[in-house]
Image (tube, rainbow, N blue to C red; front, side):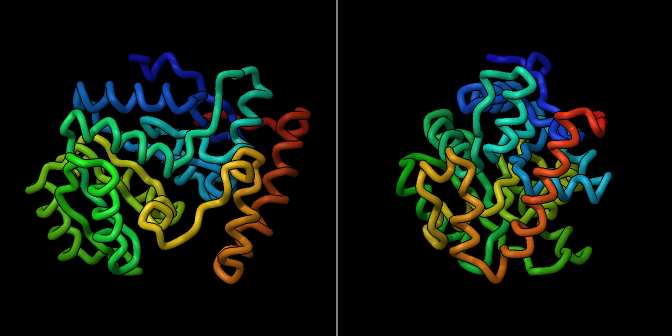
Length: 259
């Protein structure tokens, strides 16, 4: 198995994105599960990188991740420009499916946290149908606000009683990353994954972009067309700013250091 310390990181505006492809990412996950090495996994694209420019605390959370995968093609292209030729997209929904396929055979257990009402249960049923033998031991649908102390305690009691090997977190960025960083040590689990819209995609509630659009870096356009009222501000603000900042980084006009 590949050692995480042997994996270099691309510097994407001061965010360290591990130079991964799907086989390397899955190897690192398998190794962590086998040795019960606690950590959280972020899947980071343009949106996450730009949120990190506005929030140093969030940038530090990404840079402390066990894995910070290149979820979007622009992060892959930056890494390849920096000489990391093997780097490829490790897309959140694809990573979730790959890990579920592995754990179907290994017996590791899962807990689903996030999504709107009913999404967790629907996703659980879909995963159990797709991966016979998979063990999804529980789901939790959080309110659309921070948990209060009583809810925090109840959630910790629930998860610590079930002792899942993996907790999947389906919130939005940066909520899910902050949630994982704050709760990893409170939960009796090995790995936490923040996979965002993967809950809706894999539950069949939201369509995914065709694979050719994903590979061309156009998934954002597909999602914008599907959910313009919710996503227009994110993409029409972040994408041009990302291009400008990356131009400044790659030309040396501005330097970005990794925390």
